[in-house]
Length: 295
Image 1 (cartoon, helix red, strand yellow):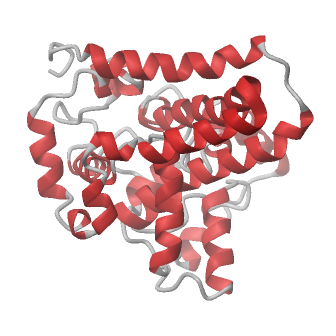
Image 2 (cartoon, rainbow, N blue to C red):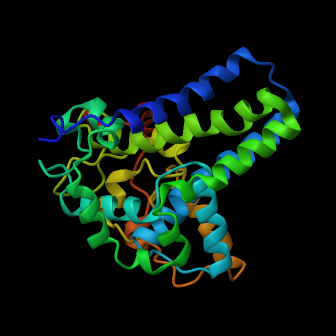
Image 3 (cartoon, rainbow, N blue to C red):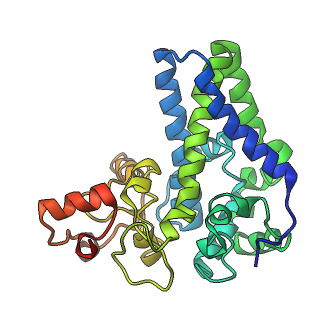
């Protein structure tokens, strides 16, 4: 359905260049002094997507003060994760049409399309759809401003310039573009890998093909427990079992203890209770992300 849409060479070129900058870092000299900065930016960008754009802005799984919202929103802008209005509108529509012909990033259109190409062949009508499904987001001043792509890229360019001026080319590539490369592909993997029948396991019977995948969950700040999320979209926790490691959940929990988050939609005790698995069965799920009963 969507694979025949017009190819946007501009967006394609930008996405390829951004990822090539991350790959190019391996031809420069890595310094261990880069690592704390690199890891901090990775967390900032990642949580800007998972905590702010997804669990807060799209699903309103909790509330937090305005200044903290802006800090996380800035992290998503640093990583060029997509302007908040479009991001929220597209994702809300994904939940409405998940794994149907109208789901723009379902693997039923092919793995490459689900992973990245949907951003490049997006129908023009999807912009209007995003505006409709994210009308509440347009009321937030900086989200409205960031609909202008020329303004949206300014935080990213400012940080890139700062890193280049202080750490040189190698520091800029390792500290900014390597984390972007990782965050991009792990975020896209939630759309692709976590909706493929052959990968992962299902805890809930949902109307879509969503799967939980431990390895995507581990790298994508808990977003990989996607079947849990589709079953309980507003829940602030995606990892529900003791071994489903969910960084975003732990950050929200910490913010709540610091009185910086409230009205948190936590899972009920029944939803969070551990399954009756042996240690070997749990280990199988950790290693293979597959239901041990199906192996």
